[in-house]
Each structure stands twice: as structure tokens, then as C-alpha cells.
Length: 375
Image 1 (cartoon, one colour):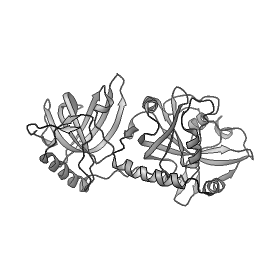
Image 2: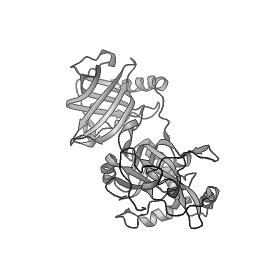
Image 3: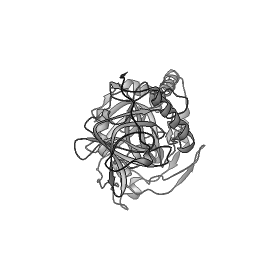
Image 4: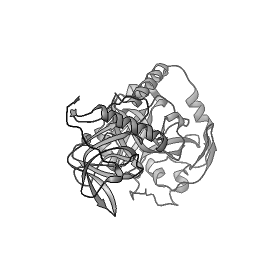
């Protein structure tokens, strides 16, 4: 990427936008959805922005090229949009991309380098641009709530939604609507994590490395519109997964007891910004992740009984029998239960299938029906 000399652009405050205008704007990201495949052939990204005038604008941006859409990682990032067209939708102003639309994105944290994220090889950036970025950073520091949903696996609790920064170690297609991602972030979950059997799956990844890392690796099941993105991910890439859902799964054992396992799901749809974004190795959050991974990799061969201790702590008596299918658990109605941990109270444990499969319709919110076999 390189800078090109141009005549300075004029930027319009969001409170002065008018229908039909094509404008250039600087603003702070208040909400966003990572690019997702629309019903047509284009990718779509929804971005709500705000500036010092406290006026918000929602932008619907489309492109046949995933990388051409704004490279946004979190709320609080700063964006520059050139040639944004303003229209009225449902009695409110809305931004859409016009011919020649271009964007830059910057980290919104005070004190960080002013480095542009863009897929463009040539773009303009002047000292005046840098002043505008810094001014928005100062304003955002007191007016925009920092994104607090990004957590490490060691802090994850069941029945919550999180954003996770991680590295992809393996992947496999489970069936037509579900896809498996094996990831890690260098920390260990409080609860042992639930595993998908990959025996009959076409698995991509270094199994010996995954087995060496053992309980530092978690399995994430990705559904519906996110499957296509998951298929395209490269092993070893760094990811930000948005609105990842965690819940407890009761697993039957040979001793008629039941162990609690932590499940991770990325449900279908784009509500609450749900999606997957590949992070470049130059990202500041990837720098920290790499340090965590390197430290964990060095320590992984040291003997530890913490995982087996966790399993013992969460063993429950259970008179039921039979195996627990992922699809049956996914579709059964959740039954409220609590279990004290060192961090907080855990709620929402599932009944074993033998107790609930005849009491509830085995469907998910998107009306998929369950399969008969375990994964």
C-alpha cells in the first residue's frame, strides 16, 4: 500500500447529510456486522456510525469482493468513507456505496499507531486526516462504550454470548448445515469442553499438534450462512468470532454418571453482529494472541492434573442410559439448573436425551430437525 498526492477532500458532519448527496465522512463505529453473503451474489456489511455531532447513520454496503468492504474489528474503530451515497429508508437517512466507494479503518484506541486498514493499494492520507482520526479517538474515549464482549477461553461461562480472538487449528464439514472449527487462544476453559467425533469426517488440520495441545483446543460448531465462510478459512489463520454462544452439555459415561461439558456454537443469521472475521498478523490483538499462544505452547508438555480435576468436580449422578447426540441436545428445551463454580453461578444445563427427547420437539430456532445419530 502507498499514499498518493491528491487535492484535499471535504468531509461532511453527519448532522448535515441530505438525501441524494454523495459525501465523504469520518466517524466512529457504533455497531457493525462482519461481511456476510447476501441473498444475491454480493457480500453485505451493515455499519452504524456516529460522529461528534451525536448523529447516527446506518450504512448498508455491498460488494462482490469480501475484502473491498470496510475492515472493522470492533465497536470504537474509526472509519473513513469516500463517495457514500445518502438515501432515505423507512423515513430515516441511510448510507449506501456508490460508484468509486472506498473506505479506510483505524484502531480507535488512544495512543495506538494511526495505521489504515484497507484492501486498496493506493489511497490518500494527509496530516489533516491524521488530525481527524485523533480528534475522533479523543471524542470516542468519552462517548463510545468500549467493546467488552471479547473474552479469553479461561473467562468463558455457560449460557452467554462472547467475541473470541483465536487461531484456527482444524476444520471439517459435519453435514449440510453444520461445520466444525477447532481453535485455541492459549488459555483453558473452566469447564472441560465438549468434543465432536471426527472419525468419519474429512478433517483438515494437524491432528498430532491438536492432540499435543489437548484441552487448550475447543470445538466450535458453525451453522447456516456462516458455513461458507468457515469452509474458506485457512488453517493457522487468526480469527475474531462474533457472538459465540456457550452452553453446558451433559455427557453420559460408562459408570452411569454424567459429566458437564462446555459447548460452543455460532448460530445462523447475523443478529447482534454474529459472524467470523479473519485478522491480519499485523493486528494489535493478534500480537497479544501470538504471545499467549507461544507461552502456552512452551508450557503444554508440563504435567498438569487441572483438567481431570475439573472433570471430577463437575461429575453428576445419573440413572439414565444411552448416548447424548449433539443434535438431540441442541434441539431439546433447556432446563434451568445451577452449579457453583469459582467464578459464578452456572445456569441452563440440558437434560439427558433419555429424560427429554419425548417431551420436546427436537428443533432449533431455524426449524432444522434433528438427526438420529451421535456425532
